[in-house]
Image (cartoon, rainbow, N blue to C red; front, top):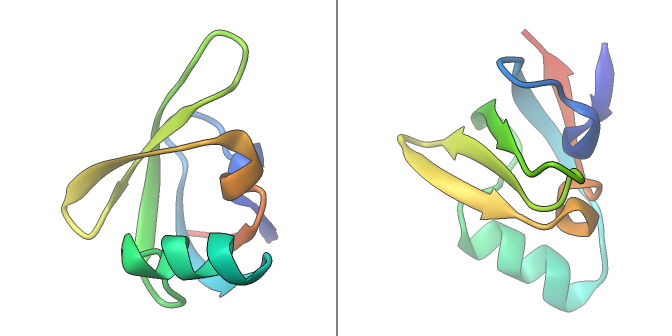
Length: 76
């Protein structure tokens, strides 16, 4: 089942399938290691859902909800 990273629940794991977004946002995500094929785990969400913290490629990464909505992942 594919869904945006922003819709993941705490503890869910997935594999990134695609990264959307406009030039600057997409480039920033790629620079941070958010690329298709990478495994991601949802670690924390702020009380209002923004920002979120994920584990990706062995490190903790904090993303805004709008950035996470550009990342589509398949649940593992």
